[in-house]
Figure (cartoon, rainbow, N blue to C red):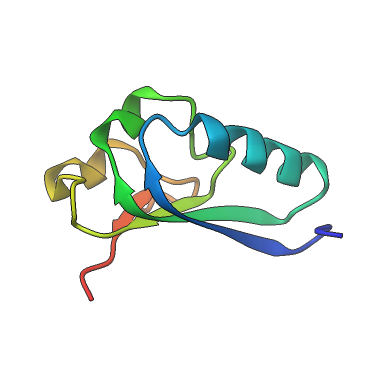
Length: 88
């Protein structure tokens, strides 16, 4: 039961986000309060994919391949950066 809970999906890589889209959609439909994604290697192509701030509240990643210069490209619902690069 995920109703009212904050969910964190953890994975090693994401390119366009299709798998995470379907997972987040099902979790939100089941009543999850929020869905966040932590992915070690986030490809820049995620910005062209199906993930969006209405479905996934925040995306956390490392600086392994996602360019830090792109974090300002999409804002979350709270106006903060949707993608957060974890440096340590």
